[in-house]
Image (cartoon, rainbow, N blue to C red; front, side, top):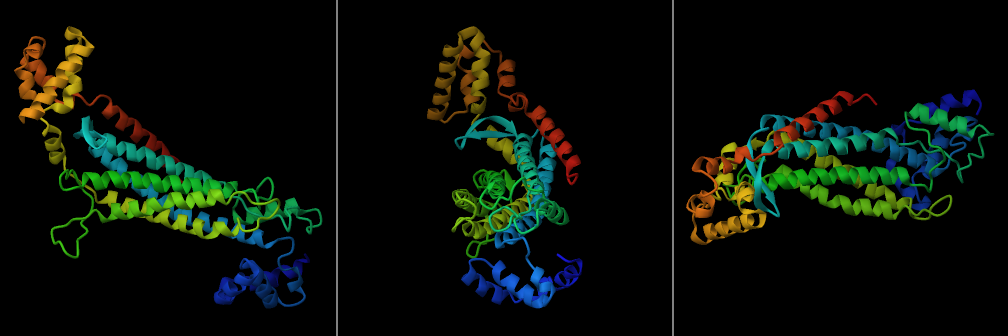
Length: 403
């Protein structure tokens, strides 16, 4: 366009001068809000520069680029909360590296672990989803292709204009216009859904550990309108509520990928609300998780009491392993299983029954049996796992913002 046309177009292109209600009404008639926006901008610019408004572009170029810019802005907030949540998880893992607790499988006590190892798992997951979201954000492309993706009205300089356009906006330059190639949207949806799901997993752990009968953490102090004694884990509940909505939104965005030929009839429009909602709920999940982890109270005493509640039964695997060299694997396993069953039937501690079982005392001295039933001696590589997670987090922190 003639150089003098740029100044009045730029001067008129300020958001505050346009009537959003009028644009929304016009969007219903045109199928998108860019058509009435171009009309209003052209009128604001006036002649002769108005003839050059929107040259070379089509409505989808403007709206897709706007979508990418909004997503990138929103992701800055999401990533900041994921960073803060990961830092809080790292603090918990470091502080409780050796704090023993019952590991639970299928919601039943299984074998000892540490709270630090649990928090280290949260930490690694948060760093992973953060890394993926950051990569998607940094690769979000501008959109400029014209009516059918050929940039036909830019006098053979379309790719040059595309590169300058993307550069001015700080966006990636796409190899081709992606009007109907919705991989950027699908990648964004997948990364957001995974981040929301990971936040939901951590929140679920917190809700379970905060249950009255478990009481190993306090994950908030939310009250009840009817019950004065309640200390509800409200933040974790809000995380779970947001995370449960994410899969349906991701599925909608993936289902909308089959855009027809050069421009879609409905698939494009189907993306707008689900993507907006997915950005919002993932941001909410990350925010509430960060806020919850930052004030989480851990009760090591209750963890140890729960660990000891079975009278040493969580160490049954360890006992069987110590008996195996003398009795054989199957015989040792069956013997320990019988003692476990007898302890449950008689309401007696597992450790007490072991100490009076001749097949056990013939192999293990009282001191050896006590050592075998010490949960702190059965933590395996839990400490090393925590250390590895913290080292990886330190490396991740060092690269934040370098992109």
